Image 1 (cartoon, rainbow, N blue to C red):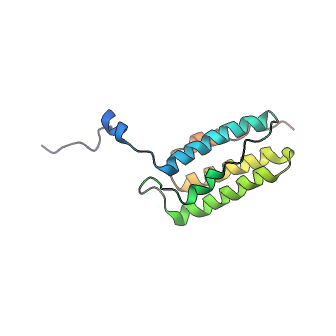
Image 2 (cartoon, helix red, strand yellow):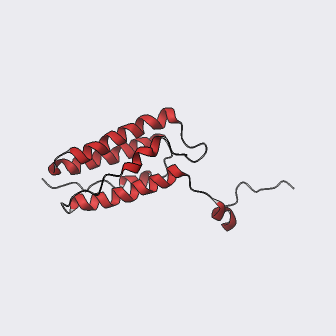
Amino acid sequence: PAEEKSSAPPSIAELADHKVSPLAQLMRDMTAFADSTKQHISRGEELLPFPTAFKDMVTVESTPGMVDHRTFDPFAFSYLHQLDSLYNVVPAQRQQAFDELIQYCAACHGQVCPGPLVRIKKLRMPASAE
């Protein structure tokens, strides 16, 4: 009989051996940063210190086979440009700048690694009643 291994879920041992790539970990850090930044902006507080480590996103090792830099890098540079903008706009414009930052995340993940899109969309600021 033929082996039917491919449809079985990974075992606990296989999951324990899984290594998170530096880029995947950086993306998790970016998500935590976005969660915290959303809360700070919502409360009218100052921004967190600028996350300089995010500039490494174009050079850190990715999960094998997940990133084509011809597609990823333009999105990454756009994200980084918008991150700079978030820190340079007046406080009244931070919510819009933050939403634009999150839109860059969603645009990239629409092309590369779509798994986090549901989570990314939840990072958007709630619509304000004006």
